[in-house]
Image 1 (cartoon, one colour):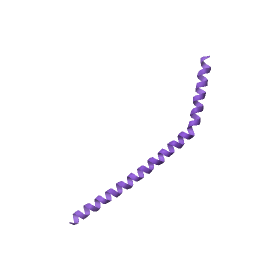
Image 2 (tube, one colour):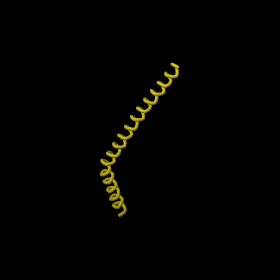
Image 3 (cartoon, helix red, strand yellow):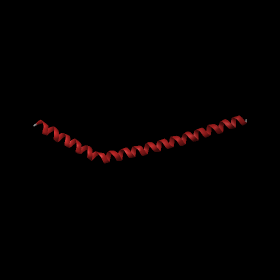
Image 4 (tube, helix red, strand yellow):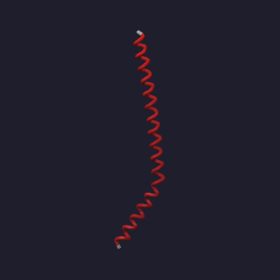
Length: 63
């Protein structure tokens, strides 16, 4: 009987630890997605400027 109680407690603890781990990973994934979105928003004007400059250089070289 005592062994059954111990196994039930171990099972509950495993579920709690895995749940906390999954919750932490999900939070980190959400924060990473926010950071990537913010980075893309900050870099987009620079990428557009580089593309415009590259296009202008390509047109100049063709002449």
